Image (tube, rainbow, N blue to C red):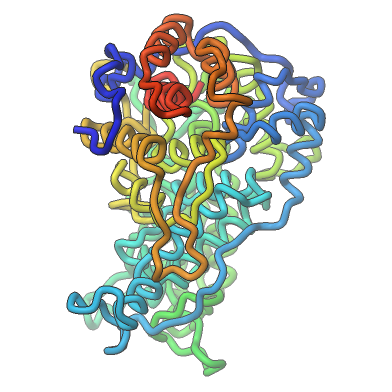
Length: 568
């Protein structure tokens, strides 16, 4: 059950029902597109205040009232251009540590706040990286970059299950931040040569075949680069639908011989050397810098790649790598495969085939003959008719706010501040331990469907009774119990609080007007009439002993409702 002192738990009349997952797909209805996507050569997108708030739900970690006002004046194109130009708010304060913790940097259960335990927490866990994620998400000025990088981290997955050194995960997330708007071909190369990815998917120190020992190159990175990071298992039409053969069956994009060819390409790369020493194969783990090559460990034979392309024998590791990545990059699947996933993370779980096709066309050509321009792709996604408008035309559009977005959207809308300590633990309780997905398939697969339906709903994969209640518990703690105090072991810690007193001009504001204000602030006016009336009734019945009682009641009931938790 929900913990804490919350007098409203018996007054919800079924409004919240967080465990009824199917009901959460019920949409707001109405609305429609307000313009043509900027990457399609159409007119400039124009936005109302409600549509501006929707844009900021898609492009940031949550709208704030001041930002809605500012962007309404600035306009779509100027805002996107501004955000693309913002430098990254990165992860800072991390430095190299050896892969094996020294004796003085291990958790000591007898002294959980002692120097050895704090050293282990800050250097050999993702604690500080996760904490900084929430600080950046709440206050960073590069909101679109942060949001796109977070989406990319769920496509080009590495995980704290293997990468437990804080400096390594910080380096990888900084790579994604810096590459959020570059060309996809550059992003692929940077990820491929990241020693973090090299360790996670076994490309670092992957040696050529040795017949004497009966060993073959490791196929992990070759397989996942194609299956998850670029083209997928089956050939696709431009709209993301599978290309079918004469028997009406999907056609595979590659076979085991192609995986073997790419695995041979990805041999001969090792970790960056430490302290300026010479490069040697099997160099120890070092997540700083870019993996270098060692030609003697590279398979110099010919290799079969995609679409019958063959890497000729005798090439350098660098030449083989370039040809392999170019071959993947130019495969027609990449635009629809990556474009659809970015749409799912930013806008809606179920984009129409036409939406996917429009985005894939921009991936293929940004309007200036350039393929793979991620800045243009992101702009096309956010400016598409299916993304813009006061409300989506399709009532089943949108997606469940994943835990991190649920947390940050509520915090930013309600004047919250946090050092990230409490938020990182709460995200984990809701089923999303940041940067620690259980497998390379992410926290949830992009193709997950709600049981009994054909609707894609990836985030619902981690939504169950326990994680749904964790969401309600989180809001209960923030609203009724004051949030969380600062951890004295965190330098500059502030704890986590909301500023509910600033929401209205007076606590005595009429219940109907209060719900209207919060509806605008939290849901761009999307709260249904029935929910509005039910919340007003509950707010009128809230205890009067607390001057902010009506405000707390209204905020709690809206933020824990399915209509808020599913972003439309």
